[in-house]
Structures are given as structure tokens and as C-alpha cells.
Length: 167
Image 1: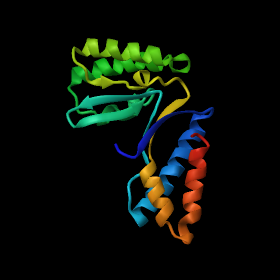
Image 2: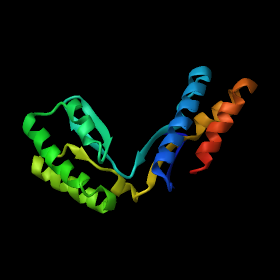
Image 3: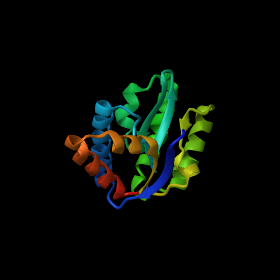
Image 4: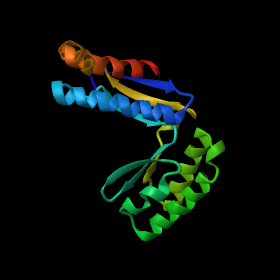
């Protein structure tokens, strides 16, 4: 990904971080739709994001959200029951859960499934609780900075200001 940088960022209030990221992405999406170019925020990964491969692809969710995505997974009944049992167990310990424990849990879950369909990247990326991994497209940001007219300059500056709060 030419023109991108990756950065681990810390936050104290997870809800505030997620609201800020939503605001940042809305502003950049608006600017990109109006002026072209690529996405400035190419993605972010929280310390508790997990991916599950089903018949349609990989679905990403957070530890604690399994009951909400359970109905969207296209897997056989037995796989679903194993996933549900394991996620119920780990979600019951969410408040004191570490990245290392999630990684261990995912390895045990895949062993129980007898195949690797659950993925957890935060441990390999070196994330800890209250951290996220951001992928920023600096070329897209520079492009927007050059082409945004005076009417939308404030939108760009607000997005960059919110982003700089974490970077």
C-alpha cells in the first residue's frame, strides 16, 4: 500500500475514540466523494476485534458482540454451537481480559473446531487493551489538502484535528 503508514494509538475512553473515528471517517468520506482520491483512513483494528471465516467471507466483530453477529454467520450448526460456547466463556471475563488471553482462547477455539476459521491479529500487532492499529493513507490526505476548496476547508481541518488527537 504505497503512501500509507500504520500507527498504534492509545486512548483512555473507548466510546469517545469510536465516536471520534466515526466522525473522522464521515468527514473524509464526504471529502473523498466530492473531490476524489482515496480513503485517508484505510482501516483500524481495535485490541478486541476478531474475524470469523464463514461461507461468505470474513466477518469482523468485537469480543462481546457475538450474539449480534451469530445470526449473520453462514456456518453449520455444530460450528455455530462451538463458537457460541467459547465466546460465551470469554465474554464472561471481558472486564479483565488481556490480549494474550484472547490469543490463547482463539488458538483453543480453532483446535476445537479442527480448522482455522477464527482470526485474531491484535496480539501479533503488539496491541494492548485501550489501543488501536490505524492505517492512514498520507497520499490521500495530501491530495485532499491540495484540492479542497474554501467551502470545505473547515471539514478537512476538523477531520485532521480529531485524527491528530490520537496520532
